[in-house]
Image 1 (spheres, rainbow, N blue to C red):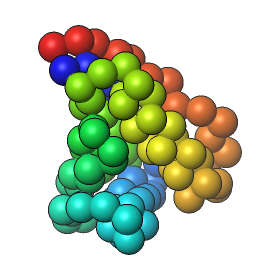
Image 2: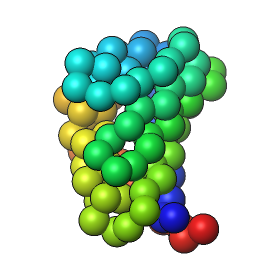
Image 3: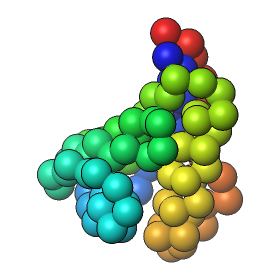
Image 4: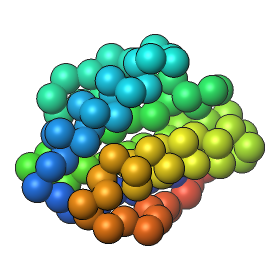
Length: 97
């Protein structure tokens, strides 16, 4: 299993988590609260966590192609939804488990 983590600081962490979760729920299975979310993205699982002013992402995938797809979906959407933050890209750290 491959894993990638990222995140950023924002006063709107919970707002963005809920917005992403609701958006993803139109196309896939998502379970979420104000602070935690789990979404199925292709062959991957995306976990989002809002703690105070930090929004974090964890993508878990069976292979490199699925991981790249999951990271891309998360990144494209958060950049669009969090336009006030002027994000250009997320800084991902990858590990193999």
